[in-house]
Every structure is written in structure tokens, then in C-alpha cells.
Image (cartoon, rainbow, N blue to C red; front, top):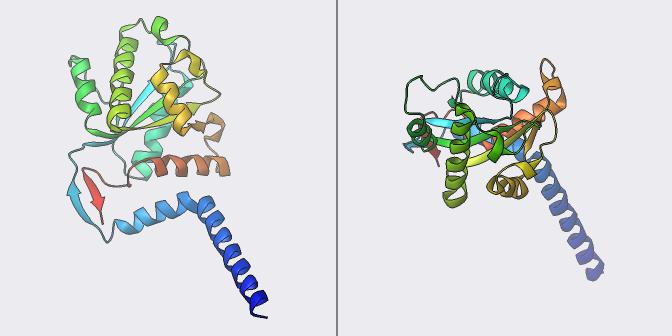
Length: 223
């Protein structure tokens, strides 16, 4: 009868929509990355005034040793994002010059970046009392300024990366805790290095998804 035919069509259409929705959710990252790659070949480009795709900041407690979080920021991250995908990163400790007015450089550079990548170490202790070294005072200024702009203007957008273990956010600024609650954090384990594991591939895809369109350099793609 017409009633049963209508019910079959309705259920079939609902099932198709459900399958498509689930597929899109599971493949969203891959679809967006593929779309960006395709868009580069067919889009008009206009300057957005930014010099860097991301500013990389490392939050750690031990200022005297190179921890895993800093190794990730200085070695692993640029190897993947800069060398393989053409991103432009500003990494403090690598790209700043001795003798510069550090606070002025941090403020100026943050405003020239599309993203703020905050790399977090699991051994973080109370930030307000631990950041006594000059380099850590600069980090405290960096975090305050970057998070202030991110919360008020959503520029730069923040990407949190936890390296080698869970991070105790109780020891971090409330603004950082809010961002963690709102959008979560990507998780990197150093055992990914030197492997082709599925987890490693998923991490890099998710990070690139959070980044602006690859290869924008000093321009921003618009349809």
C-alpha cells in the first residue's frame, strides 16, 4: 500500500542521512584537509597581514634542561609542519635574537601569527611561583598576552598539545583551563617518533586540521 511504501522510503532516507552524517563526522578531518589542498589551486588570494602560521610556546617547569616538550617544539614539530607541509612557525628559543627587547618582540610576533600552539609538559608545577627564571618570566608574559587575545578576539586561535602524559591543569592559569575545557588538547607521545603508527598519523592530521590552510605563507585563501 501507499502507506507502507511511504514508510519504507522514509526509513530508507533516514538511514542514508544517518550513514552520511556518521561518515562525515568520522572523515571530517580528512575531508577538510583534502578541500584545503584542492582550494589552493582554484582560490583567489588576499593578504591577511600575518607573517607566521603559528607561534610555538613551551610550558615547562625545569628551565635548565631540554625536556621532552621542548624537544617536540624545537625538533619534531618544525620537521613535520615546516619541512613536510610548508608552514611558517615562530618558535621562541629558536627564532628570537639575543639583545632584542623581548617583551616587545613577543607582543609584536604574537599579533603576526594565525595560531598559538602551546606545548605542555606533564611535570608542570605551580606556574605563578615556579616561573622565576628570566626565560620563564618571558613565558608567563607570553601566555598572558596570547591567551588574553585568544579569549577576547579569538586571534590567534589556541592549539594545546600535551607531550608524554596527562597535564595537571590545576597548576595553570584559569584562562588556559577554560580553553582546555572548551576545545580539549591534542596528545603527543614520544614513542610515536620513528614509527608509522596510526596514532601518529591521526595526531598530525588533527594538528593540521587545527592549523590554517597549509601553504598560505603571508596570504589567506578565500573562495
